[in-house]
Length: 286
Image (cartoon, rainbow, N blue to C red; front, side, top):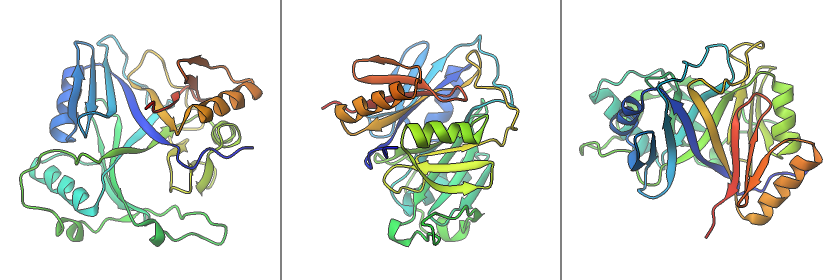
């Protein structure tokens, strides 16, 4: 097994939505992204005005994603600093935004929400990597402690909310899968991501370069969940960004060696994981 390149990261996430107008409004006014481009059926959202982070593809004929199915558990927007996260939380309080939770994971602090079509969202900031505490095997704990809300809000600025900071990125994705061993084989043994945290038999957190996780997977929708439905709302695909064309070619050879079906065009791989979650593997061209 060849480990994936340490500089691999997550790119944009594409969601299939029924009510494009409502979702654009939510992700701009509530979450704080900006419109990069917009048509009658698609919107591309950004934080810095040039880098796509979230793509929304509208189709009013989609069915609502079944509860007991694979798909997106949440997309995770990473803000640069604790002050930035404090500003987001202050905005949510001021705007009376309903939140799904808030946690201290020891390696990060996170806020959780659901969008109007029940797609999960995490907005988080990382603790300095040198302060992450690993066990004797080098793994990170599966910690979910209460967030120090008062301490966080003490760092918030008093200026009016003007959206997510420009350096916000898509830090990770968390997926619902059908089977952990099957997903682990694909993501770890084939693609080359490395295990960072494991929660018994029901969740696995993996990454490149020792990050706490670029991809998480769980079976919390049930071990008998159906694969991600194609004609339903939710995740269409997410991007895995490799540093250069050589790394994309290496990934292509891994998939061929393991007899995994994919399409390849313009130095870009399109593939689905064993649960039916779509993935685009590419590099950023200069």
